[in-house]
Image 1 (cartoon, rainbow, N blue to C red):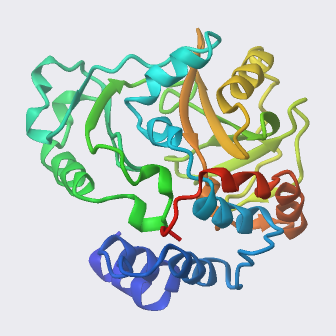
Image 2: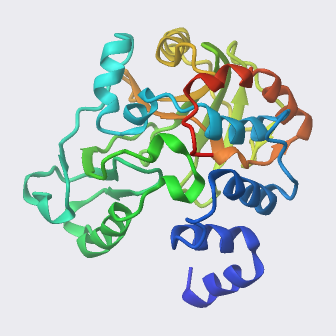
Length: 313
């Protein structure tokens, strides 16, 4: 995307404008409640009910304000979470890191394999793929990751778990599935310890664009969408590892009101991916809208008050 195209989107699209200004710290002085109300209005076009939330998206905002379990900090730290997962379950593997560093300048690229992935441990989305080290744009990677290291991801969406995560860069081996380009995500939505929905993300970096198919825990295709379109013609067979994945998701989530547990399968083993406490930041579009209300009913938000930090909201 050219600079002119981005500027046009900035001027004409309030969602793009809000996201950009949030990254610049424009709204940092707003209280958590005021920020979340403002963002919800921009992204969803409605006023959120933060007193008696009904929809999934409204309950995501409520949980941001009132469910502040100290354990969540380790759970969103992409490096520290590996130890957490190993303690909680023996049913899945974790990707062994190739290294973790405080600064981009400390990365010993000469010792890394020909393909790898770099990711920041303290945020979401700061990922750089190296598919061929001979063609790797180290300068561009450094620019992206150095910028991310300076950003406290909490202030972009007021997702409390990220607030106190130490910024670092981690390297992992780059895996792919039958596409030869990426690994499919298997995202398990767990409500109070019970897996109730599975999302398969695919073609995230392909020409056809990001798609998502939704399934029940019994692997029945759902005629519903969250933000990205589904593709009924893209058939995914019921995974042979389905039961193991669901059991691991339940073990890892415990009694948390809601958490999404992501997994990958390399063709040989099932691997843990990450925890996400607020799917799509709690602003994704549900089609049909009634599906968002149904998912909201699966969350007993009143159980979240125990860990509220006084003065934060």
